[in-house]
Image 1 (cartoon, rainbow, N blue to C red):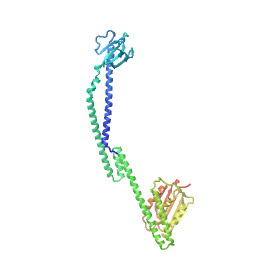
Image 2 (tube, helix red, strand yellow; image 1 turned 180 degrees about the vertical axis):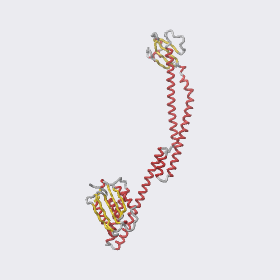
Image 3 (cartoon, helix red, strand yellow; image 1 turned 90 degrees about the vertical axis):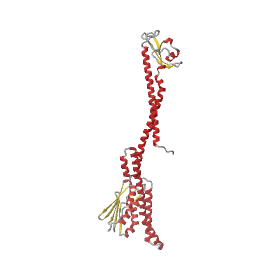
Image 4 (tube, rainbow, N blue to C red; image 1 turned 135 degrees about the horizontal axis):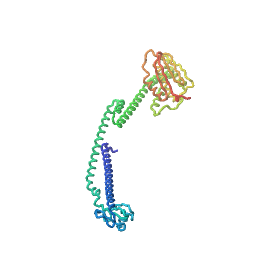
Length: 403
């Protein structure tokens, strides 16, 4: 596609506008001059007609351009233009001999009809002055076009310099917030809107990069442990195919890998919100407790479940399992020995784990991913530390439940 210079394009359009405006003014000026000239001629025609008393004996002071004729003695071309003997009619036309006349059909004070013929050929000053004024008018047009070109160049030059300065400021902005502040201070509204739009796009891009980085970190977080457990279990099973503990660990690792892959695929999809589904709360939590029970037992922990048997979530089971499994894993890995209590009803889910003897790092990456997954299915997950342990609370809106 051919590229155009904004400066040249605006200069051409500004010059075209100036030329059109000039033509309109010239046409309006000429029309006004012709109207005024005709008005003066007609006024003089009526003034001379008032001096005629007898058409057969015109006044001796009648100007040389005027001629009085009775209606019966009118030339054929004038009679045709007047339309017969129509008294009060005023016409103007060019005769066959090239002379331009104004003709008034009127009456004397005694009631005698007559026609007053005014030969204005030598008095059409506007027509005579057109040729002489053409050069001046053309020169005026050239001056106006030059002014329009210079003004447009100067205007666009200022705008281009302002846009270039704004572009440098945009490129030098350290973050979207600084760019938003720059947009607020920009005196040209359109440039400010452009900078604000760039800040919005920049912020969206940073958010997308953060989500991608977080997702990749979640993959590393979720896959590293089950993969290592799977390798270890496979090594033990290779030496002893009947090794029950290795088989159990391998099964847990496969389940966790399956949940992690489902969660990542769902987060990466273009789905605008939660999909339909049906998850029975008691069965889901009981299955997770059984799956993670051996890991909890190894750390001196046990699960105590109090679940409303009628509680059912209208959400995909693999996503609900991912959220709940991460909550349980955090409670196991970062809690101390004792009982992990889980209570769930229509009002929400409450998970309490004992306090660890030594404060362990955690609740960071995994909880952020859990928060994103929970938000997609209409849940809100919060965490708080207490004197005797930690409390996870998950709440949901009414649309998340099956009635």
